[in-house]
Length: 609
Ligand code: F6R
Image (cartoon, rainbow, N blue to C red; front, side, top):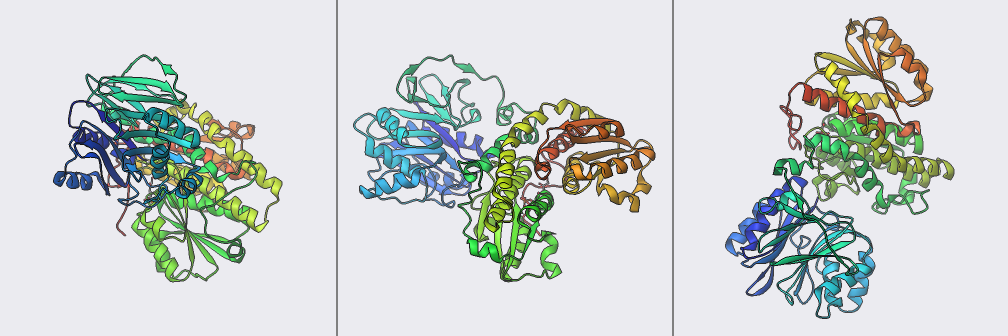
């Protein structure tokens, strides 16, 4: 996700901005840029790709000056490119803006400004802000920014410079984080504390709806209406690595806790204001095409494949279209039957997985339409698919995927509901009920996270074992597959996930005294059968940890230890039930002293077949 750094002081700003942006690299980005007030006026240099590209350009043509803003962009509006990178400017090139967040009404503002002669060069919402501020400027940059904000809707953090007032840096926070660093004869802004931690540990944390005006000699804090605010400085006493992890010991744990936000962001404006229907403006497929779909293939790897298995249940249940799931590395070698009425859904957090990309190309070669569910705008998968559903999970740094997986589930719920409402396979009242429940999921995840201590104890118990089993029926089976993968990849404990009813066809031979079995039971219509299967393993000496939906008391009696999770519509339960399994893997890895975020032999983005 995007990063902001700003500096005003007595030192060369270019290096401070670049070093600050390096501290934000972990957030993920696809381009970077700086604007500095130099002896030739406000100068902007931007470059697509890694920061080193920008550094190379600056090595040949440095930006010398004592005030500047910098940005790393994670593409939202418009593909990654030099021109779409920040900072943006207006036609006079006297104003410059960096921005994190989204301006929801940027199209109407753009049309209005274009009608009065403004010419835009990029596809971004941010460029509109620089033109808007320029159009409202009457000799006071603070007032111009305040007026501009009254015209903007959405969420944003801004850093603004103008050549007309070259000693001032204006910063705004409106539902997108921004902090102010306070130094001696120099001051800073940053979208996250690590950006400025090399220079000062004294910060003001801006609240939503507040702004700051920085000069080298001081910082003024005020509301967006211009009322001055006085605030205590906050002294940062963590080191940079901790700060990047926002106080969590590992990125994986941080990302597990970020899931409620990822759910909300992925649902975002895709639920219409009535709260009863799904809006998927990003899809280019027509209703007529949707009516023609005869089958869907969901293709992905690893965790994304497991999301696809849940996706199959969702789409079949809601849209009544037959769905097949395929591991991407197998897909093109099995001569899949693809017709013009086959829709292929590829799922990839990174959007760069070579196996998934190869499957996508095979599907397109055979004439299928391809929808990508991905977390990275502008990734190869996103560029090559016909339609893209972006999951707004934010950058995922831990190798073990957590929030990307659950955001993929949310994307499948939205897509399944959208297909159902287009095809009329579910009545409006049912769709409205599912949407209502969907919106409650983030709070319910938060409730589960409050029970992390129980899972930690379970993890400590299982961490001494070398083998264990996960069981579940129906959609729970897809979830335990993911729980088992998570445990394997970071704890290195061997585990197998089985449909509960399948054990007796062979695997039951492996159940012996004391072996841990994790049983998931969230589906009311399969509940009694699952309890019977639990009894089968208990009778052979297994020690059973049961995870079930609140209110199902029979399971409590059947297992050795139990965790209750909040109730929801059974179809939505994977978005809740996977969370304790993620925590189980995390704490088991921790108990075994493993490198949780960087497990052996694995990479975050697998770009080889
Ligand atoms: C496991 C994990 C992997 C990925 C797989 C696909 O935690 O992260 O199994 O899910 O390598 O990666 P993407 O989603 O980037 O295509």
